[in-house]
Amino acid sequence: MSGGEASVLVVEDEPQMLRFLRTTLVSQGFQVLEAMTGKDAIEAVAFRNPEVILLDLMLPDMDGLDVIRTVREWSHTPIVVISARGREDDKILALDLGADDYLTKPFGTGELFARIRVSLRHAVKAASDEQAVFVAGDLTVDMAKRQVTVGGEGIHLTKREYRLLITLIKHADRVVTHRQLLQEVWGPGYETELPYLRVYVGQLRRKLEPDPARPRLLLTEPGVGYRLKAE
Image (cartoon, rainbow, N blue to C red; front, side):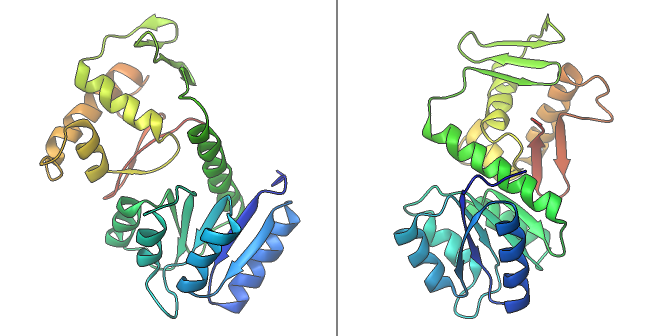
């Protein structure tokens, strides 16, 4: 896999980890920008325009969550959190604030590159027109015609089921938190109504998965949310 000269801003204050990430990314053809503080990271996003941000949450001058919050006020650059803080609360808050993905240290380089590739694809898609047809395995969703098929057979979805599916497609291959899904599909005031979400995810799995008890498409991220697998 080659980075194709895509620029990655690495925000990391541990010199050893910074050297490892720099060497690994450069070896795959990425252009690497570096920042060791939150202030420098925000300035780098503003003035150097990276295509992806790898962000450690534990920085010397501010919490990485505050970096996400600040950057998201004006930038849609994909943010992949890389942190030793693996608590569900940290993951949920980072994703709710606008991070695109979350990797807990230690992680494999293969997984890191996969998350970067997904983030780059989403950035390209966001800059272009909405995808008219989504395909993942046997599932095909024609958004222009509002048609859903599995293995060529038409599937009837309720309006709420279809809206949930489209929301997951919009964030395909990324974790979408329970709160995000409830806000986007049900609206303000439903952020804590987790039973609603579980019921509808179960209904989608029964209609779209060959074996709903062992889903391969609509995956659970325990305690955090769901991920629609597009790869």
